[in-house]
Length: 110
Length: 113
Image 1 (cartoon, each protein chain N blue to C red):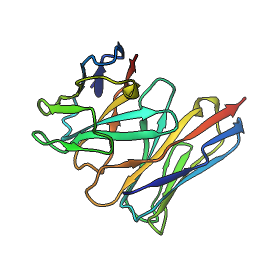
Image 2: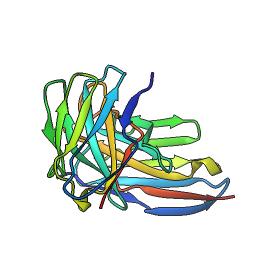
Image 3: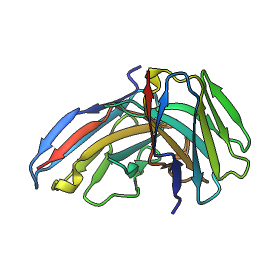
């Protein structure tokens, strides 16, 4: 089945720093989604990508659909304390259910 | 709009007991999903319903049953709970197609002793 490798597993950064995380798949994907989960809450959709090479921003967040269609990247600029949480990538190919990565846990040191 | 709602928020069961987790969405979405989330495992799909009247198994369906009661509601039943089913359960929905943007509920935290 489809597998997603999300990295890094966790990161500790200083407030104000930029953050980068990525996901790679074992097969070509048609859709890449990025979610954030706060403690005790459900995941919240941040960005959706549907075309290879697509670059989409949502405030300080920018995500890209890799040109090979096997990877995606999420960048957060000028991190703030409320960026703390777990970030998940998800994707699929064809008419199949989404597959989720295992998440990147972000901690921000003020 | 409340989005996706789940009840209960917390539940403790003894091994062998049964229970049903309820999920409802008010976004007129066609597809609905049940996931479980365990530490370090990410989100794993239990069952999904691509449209009203259909249900399909996901990655980890054993020990669970589902019912798509109507377009709004999708329930998950544990017939005989086991400690391995201790987890956080999330319901989600999407407007069209099973590979598109999904919106999640707040979760049900289940402990089986």
